[in-house]
Length: 195
Image (cartoon, rainbow, N blue to C red; front, side, top):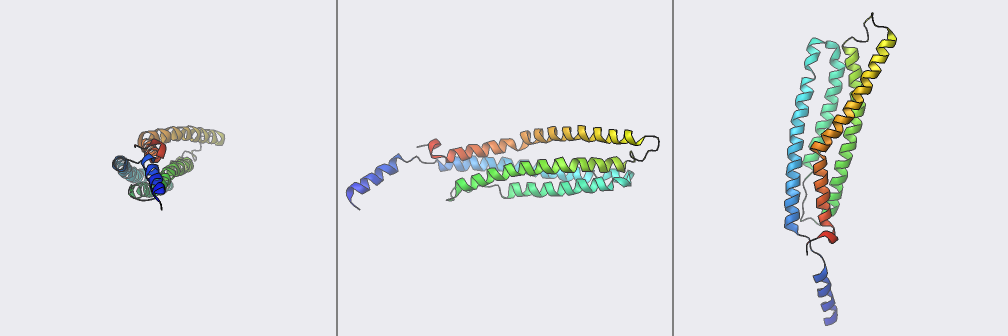
């Protein structure tokens, strides 16, 4: 290698933007700490809610199916949350940092969609099981058409309520973590790096 090639290499290296690794690691640690705290609180809240769903079974034994559906949803969701905070950390010193960040952004996005689908499917099933468990469908004084209309109205309003609450839940708890992760990802972009 001659002197001119070394000079060109050195000049090229000087103009290459550099990543502020310390700032990136700090932002990553802050992001991961917040996500882990939120997920841990959410795990406890989900566990308590699932346990509480079995209390009505003591008074209405036919609600056991609804409670089992709530238990299945609760176990699935807690498993998803544990995956969120166990695999959430970033190693900024790694060579594949941008790929890791992209994977985590994709994982969070998939987490949102999987949770939405599970809630939108399980909630109507749980409501139907609750409706039948409370003997609303077997009351002889209520005509069959009225029972069907009542159940349809309950399902419609419950599904709308579930969609609204699910979106508010994500906006409050997990969307800020996704935004922060995207911000960290932008810091990896050479056009946004500190020189």
